[in-house]
Length: 395
Image (cartoon, rainbow, N blue to C red; front, side):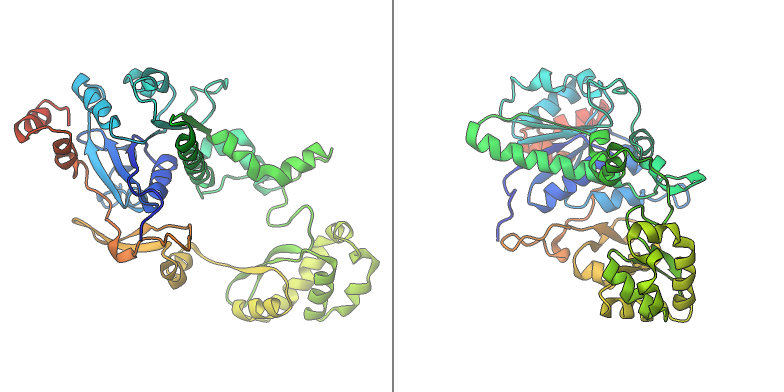
């Protein structure tokens, strides 16, 4: 069965998380992704793990299904070869800092006329018009600039999340823009620039927090509680923790009965979410007295039966070992030279007419420059020229 992007070629200049996640999704959708990396060291995420000296595991997780070509874009011949690769490409994707691609002669305005069908996808921290356009951008720093950190944590302490939500959201938005541009190119015959800023991507997840501000209310950090629903928090069991999200008055009455306190259902202090928030400490004590008597799984089973939203608070090690993630193909076992069996990210999108690739057929992450000779030979370069390019530090 064919995949949606079979026959589409991507020249991937991206690095770290956002861009590589976008090209991972494109590769799983069938695109031929050629990853361009600097000779000698590769892209930044390839840096050796400081504890083991092995290839950084983050790189391995994000770069299955791709081919690696080394090109020194600071060398004139390297730039010539990059342009030659673009002649047969449908998509260019990059997430360098502001001005980097232009310094290589590969900025959108510099090459758009030469490659009118090319879709040029750019992911930056901030828009080119932003006063922060030249500010270094990482998930952590955009969390700070966007307000993510301000709304996360407890009243006395703001914290970042270690999950790279903004990076991966940027990668997903890049893919959305690229696919839309491919559809439009099918109608017009012309490519275009797709421009995604991490700060822009961070705004939609802030909808509920911003809604409070626009409604004239002051936002307060509530830790694991919620400003519009009560009770909700993390509660201890005999062998772990459970998050309970009691999102309606009817569900609160059910929860009160489960906790052995049915009289709370008729207590006027518990009539609405707003009134319950005012006595949240008291309600949390009631719920904790119940949850402490049960195991985590017993609580989850009882709450599922009662139709009350909840979830086990799982350790990240427990998530990593969850067999369901492998059954769904979200985590895939692969192999990597000198590191043996590794785990790579799979495809989270499910399509009935374009199944995700069989995990057994997924191409392992490439070694640095592994496909350079193969790709350059396809451009017409012979073995002696490829050797000279290597000797000259071009590849």
